[in-house]
Image (spheres, one colour):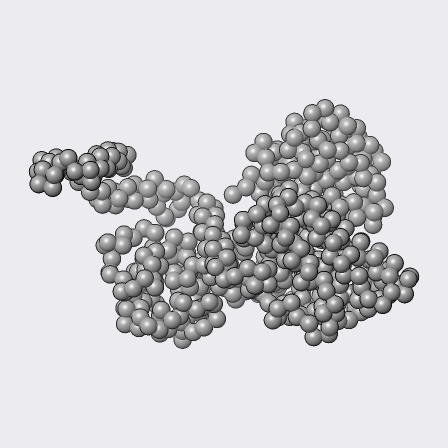
Length: 582
């Protein structure tokens, strides 16, 4: 999945021991064991997810929930395969004919057939679809079918089987209904975004535990590291790796080892050789004494040559923007503090801070829609929000000192859209889009008490930080409508179809490649598949029959000449496929 996702048994043992200590005590052994398992599952989940990219965190959650049910016997491999593969192994010409009309495509019909053949509960699903075509069509055409009753089956479905039906007939809603399944099996906290807390992460480390921050577009942990160092009153020696920088890095490590200051090695994918040296130095406890306050922070893009030993002893961190408006606002208000709310005495400050965070989340959320969202995938990140907050704070403080009554909206809009975020924008249409957002979000009407960006996206009012954090948890919808970022349902459909396809591909890549205890080996599965495909390969064309048919239709007609050429190409392809399968 990614070369940087390396963990070790030693890391798991460390998490296990911590879970044993922190799990709720109970004199009854069975309850104590249940408490330890629950605590261990949660801490392991947090530990692993902290080092995963956003697109893989949801995959990990789904796999974790499914593994729990597979081990308990509530789910079988048939359920798992129907979720991941659907009806991909079936041939549309060899199964029951689908209903008339184009409301259900071949892929979804094959998914339904596969469910009926492998899951007893759904044995009459194709018959139900044919018999009640109108109600099934109406259900499939719904914008959010997962919120409505499933025709004929609703009373028999639990969360798992409901997920399988929606995956089969509306695969674009798979991720949404999968989150409901995860919440049912593991708990609601497993589907909620968990912002990275650098301070608590630092508390888990020792002087021989490096931090590896995995870089991606728009993620730069430098500001967070420097803020933590300032809070801890530690000096940070920073160097950007590259040709000839190993000497500087070695000097900073030596200084940190002896004095306890921190070393920040940036862009280490450009200095892999030095990382091998650093690994040996940190792993060998007999080599030298290290000041207990010393920490080394490493930032690197995914790199196949990155030392595995260093990854397996390190705490890995990704700092990507979370997916979803709720997750984005949650991350922003994990960064916002009570002191920040109190720093400006004007009433507009707290409202405009919320609006600015909302705008920042919208700007980042549009990136997931690809070229439909932004023509160019700009690296908007936390530093853009920091700069805008700093400007807004200074601007309102200056207004307060001058006793100005109204906010100068034109100044705020220009600074945010043209200077701060606009400094990254290179496309004229993207600049126009950014200007449109600031015109909508930064105007006098947003200060009204009952103003809403969109239904469900209101602005809280209060002086305490918990008012805003509770509003994020309880009021912002868990599933966003595309209109909140200025797009329509077609854009959302395209994104969710791609998201589901990536989900299934990633899960397939995580599956074991070799033979196991009682199941079929990879080679046996491939052989069976080849035999099945070989039986479906058509026979070679009969040249005499073709020649006679062409003679009747007119050999020299342009369409028949083209037909003959295409047939020759197809004959070569069929022969190649047959030879390869054999």
